[in-house]
Every structure is written in C-alpha cells, then in structure tokens.
Length: 227
Image 1: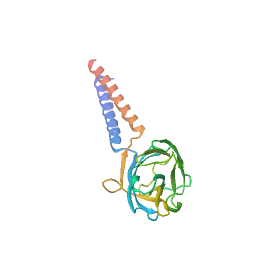
Image 2: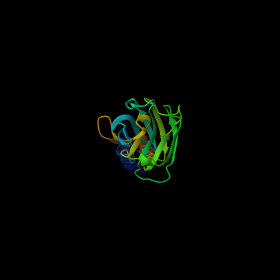
Image 3: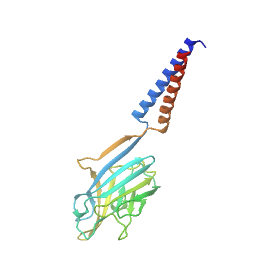
Image 4: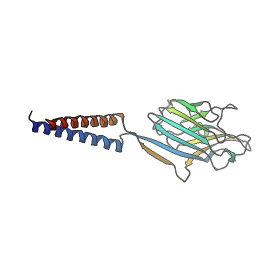
C-alpha cells in the first residue's frame, strides 16, 4: 500500500472510531434505562376512629436498584399519637402491576426491626395488594426516631408512590389501638418521583473500545508519518 493510501486508510478508520465514541457518549448522556425513586410522608387517616385525621409521622424513600426496590422508612414523629408506646407495624401497597406472587425481602437493617416479612393483603381491611410486616415483638418494632431499610427482591417498577399506607399501632383513642394512614406528601409539598439515568453495561463497553481503537489508530498514523 502506498503512503498516501495508508494515510487515507488511517484517517477513515479514525473518523469511524470518533463516530462510535460520540454515539456511545450520547447513549451515556441520554441513558438507555431508568430507575425511579420517590420520597413520601404519611399521612392522611384512612381508618382508625378517633385517631388524628392528619399527622405527618413517618417518611418513606423507595429507590429502584436493578430489578429490586430498596425501601428506607423513618418513624419521624410518633409522639403525635396518644398511647404508651406507638410504633409502626406495617406498610401496605397498591401495586401498579399486581401479581399474587409478591417476591421476597432481604437486606433488613437499622432501627429496632430485625425482620421484615412480605405477604398478600394490606391497608384498611386487608383489601390492598400486599404489605411489608415489621417484627411485632416487644423488642422488635420500629419506634419513634428509628429507621429501617430493606430490599424487595424483584420489586423494581411494581410500586406506586401514591398507593402506600402506614399502619400505626400501640395508640390509644377510646377503643382504637391502631390506624392506617396513606402517603400523601413530601416535605415542601407533593409526591416527588425522580427518574435516574442508569447506562447499560454495553454502552460503557462500546465507549471504552472506541477509545482504545482511537489510540491504536493514532499510533499507526504516527508510524506512517515517520516512514
């Protein structure tokens, strides 16, 4: 191959590599997958005669991570309720895509809760799709000021921030000892759902290969100029 032809070949390859890298960068910026997150506060009274009709006493953050959903619940102000030791006993969910198979829970940590179970039914009267149950023993419950985190295996994309409710137990209002409150706001007002860009691994691979190819072409071009 003549010198001029070699230079033209290198330039053509260099241009193609730059286009590949540019495409990969655009994919990284645009994102080819999204993960949702939301933070909600409870609540507005759903059931529990005599309990406060509004009482923002807990905050829940949910984040999709891969195929799973990570929950973090903080009992921020259970002192709003009358009773010897109010605690959070469960979170009920109305799902965006309900299946009788509710999955499993792992990675429980924090607070006074050592276990979180998952089951069908929840909310007032057990009519909701599913619920997360927190340990009910005297030393295994979510008390005021505590936070518990858990992972719902396979739960990514199934939850709906508008379809959540918290079950407060250990309260005392006449004959009422528990109440359900729905998620209705975030500090500052309004439920907030935030899409998070999560590039696919293949996009990173294409970007890296493009950079390597450009480096190789530069070295080849440098050798061609010295000949």
